[in-house]
Image (cartoon, rainbow, N blue to C red; front, top):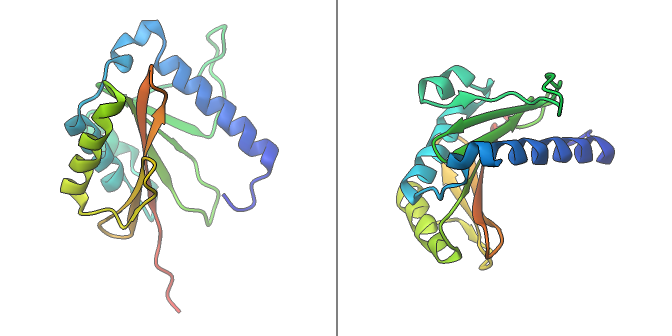
Length: 176
């Protein structure tokens, strides 16, 4: 995020973590249930088709069954935030309102049943998008999606509560 200060990035990260905490609170137990590889691939597919040169197509997300969430303070008052948060089934999607000239990012997050479930998710992603063009060997893989979109799939969480993050970015091709 070129041109964004470190304090601004920290505030954004804190807000994102608060949103994740809200989405995974006991009141939202469904969000904590493990997502299947098929659900995760479908969620990533939603991001792939919804992020592009015009930004995030929120109407397309809604048409695909995603519900928009709001961020509020402890006392229930709405909080202004550049974060855009959606939920669908056992998935959570987070995006931001990008600064002019920066790439749009759409990130799907989900809990998974166990650490041993992650290779099945990697295989499902490879089945949908082809072999990763980069694999760090530690649980992070990069896939190319159609029309200048790229996917960063990573194993997150811990052994007690394993999860995944799949960040989809649209990168425009500049003409010279």
